[in-house]
Image (cartoon, rainbow, N blue to C red; front, side, top):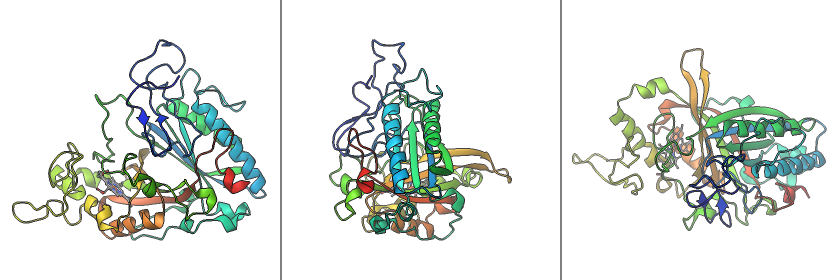
Amino acid sequence: LLGGAGAGLVAGAAGGAVLGRAGAAASASAGQPGSGQVGGGQVPFHGPRQAGIVEPQQARVHLAAFDLLPGAGREELRTLLRRWSGTSARLGRGEPADEYESRIAADAGPCSLTVTFGFGATLFDKAGLAGLRPRALDPLPDFPEDAIDRARSDGDLWVQIGADDALVAFNALRVLQRQAAGTAAQRWQMTGFGRTPGATARPMTGRNLMGQVDGTNNPRPQDQDFAAKVFCGADEPGWLAGGSYVVLRRIRMLLDNWENLPEDRQERVIGRRKSDGAPLSGGGEHTAVDLAAQNADGTLAVPADAHVRVAAPASNGGAAMLRRGFSYHDGTLPDGSPDAGLLFLAFQADPRRGFVPVQRKLARGDGLSRFLRHEASGLYAVPPGAPEGGYVGQALLE
Ligand code: HEM
């Protein structure tokens, strides 16, 4: 049951059209598993790009990292990736995974499930592949004010599971965890969320836990230079051509401080209006930000330390990335503040020309940084997608 017309179709950058969320009508097969609008959404696992990069963000995400167990090498890694890929393809079609499945997602459709795999720098030595580790995978530098917990950072293998239903997402995580047994141990796991499709009267840019419209000025698949910004070119080792790099930052928001700030000051911290995300230089949400615009009194309309000014490609030699983060909330910390924020994820062609220069600048003091703590970090090479019958990472491992 593929999603129907219109809204779910993401064109282009993936090398063809992929069907995202189910379209308008609950079809004639209403009553069948997954025949509802959300349940029927199907994203093909196989293709030139991995799923879970250009597709609309789902309502739920699990992120996890695994480390190879002592004694596991290239052969065991190949077996695991073959298995994980086969399972992800089946679950993405709404079929049961295998004997590891425990009916958690029974009765539901695939709910736009995507599973995305990445490789951390530490994988290559362990798998006897040191010569194929790309230079861009060198560890990220330390940034001022970082408070990174290494136990919740890094890892040999990275997995992103997105779905529009929490049970479907958990089921996929659980199956992959069980299939890893004996080969790789889970290092850390995080759960995030975004807006549920259908929650707003029309499709809209989502909001983060600070209440801001977030994602407006992302590169768009229809932009001419989209692929060059997000996907690796021929300067990478051959196995990664057409792949990407993803940076993960678990960023806690100091919400008690933020929420005490009057809305007009909150808007100056970002440089956009809270109500509709429009830039303070004028226009609507999608009007280009005019960094030179001035207020009547001659001050900058978008303040000098506004997040959108400091992060903008124009301020960073063209540095660009596709942000695809999810909110998280893991209860309350001992001091009574919410353990909540953003699982920041950014896909890019080269982190040395994307995330690193931008974060260097932000950490030196954009207006937003004083309301944030970066608490975990990861950088992973995201191989290209697997063709039908193949598995993710095949070009590296065979
Ligand atoms: C833009 C929020 C962290 C890079 C924005 C916008 C918001 C926002 C509301 C404006 C709307 C948009 O274009 O999406 C946040 C929050 C963060 C965070 C709440 C942390 C919790 C970061 C980090 C980076 C980053 C760590 C990269 C190092 C960008 C970029 C833009 C942007 C490149 C677009 C700027 C432009 O060209 O207009 N962010 N952001 N952000 N942010 Fe962040």
